[in-house]
Image 1 (cartoon, rainbow, N blue to C red):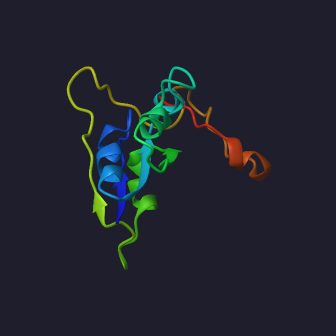
Image 2 (image 1 turned 90 degrees about the vertical axis):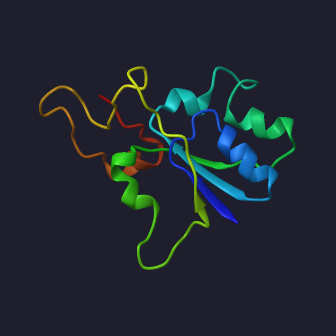
Length: 118
């Protein structure tokens, strides 16, 4: 099965999916969470600990969630998540706080571009 977690965080939900044999894909708006604290403390280290296949991870703003699925034919067998909630979660979205600061990313820089969040 193919599972998607749009709020992957530390990857605990995808670890559970992988333990049941799923191929996993996850996104998170916070690149710091995806990178982790170090090589030993990140999403991938959780998968390594259980000898599981590492998930595919993408830094993404889920306000653009429609980019991750198709309406004509399902891609995922399951979309499973624990979305952030409450005051501590905070509201974030891609962009810049400065008026007019967001400019299109040049094509040659798209492969490694990390969008700002506000």
